Length: 343
Image (tube, helix red, strand yellow):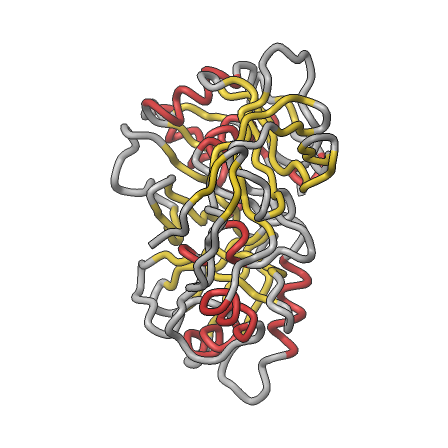
């Protein structure tokens, strides 16, 4: 579904999964600065949106996801995961309840599959999930100068330390965005948003994960999983990794060699000593840090190992530590030294 903001002067369409919104509006680095240093808005209307009504909606979704949804207060924001029976991540949701309905936005192209799963789990409960992507859109505000109050026409907000997602009526998206621009909130493309997301070490489903990814591997155990809640699909794996062992892989931030005239592609192998140890996830050019990426690599790769992402030299920065997960103490060998276990 193509966004009306693609008609904005200078808009350059994004491709692939993010088709339908703008990659940038002519100056991606200035757009990054606006989001990081002042006030900006990002059209993320390509994301799927679900709305769940019914008296049992909170307890029902609580039983199906990794998060404590049952105690979600009106206006509060949370992240949640739907896992496979084996504990692999299938869906990532950002959710908020407005007192009468629970709203969730998800990755582009995934709402239909998520809705099908939810419909299959309704049984006799008083819940009514619906895909409302055609009627509503996500517009994100970000930056230290962003006003606290959402603009008129916002249906629900979902805020965290990275920014504020606003659910707005899709037929009002252009007008609300124009009003924000008049108030000095610069329109920024998805490329700027993605560069700052990567810099902030925030993984994205389908970009920094694959069909085998576990919550511990990408750090979502801290933000999207409630470890003390009741049973849900995949919980046994989460508990086993958390209490007894370690995930097989870990998320890393990659500083890519700026002297290279190319960027690695998503999915390109990450190698150490010419051996494949993982894959390249999200990639971007950052206004200050240059070429950057996220990667998912084997847990046992030394934290100071020299890596290559798609052949491009890369220095790693630890996002998820090698000893994440279990209470089992391990000693990892760093090149030439021994690393003591975390206490």
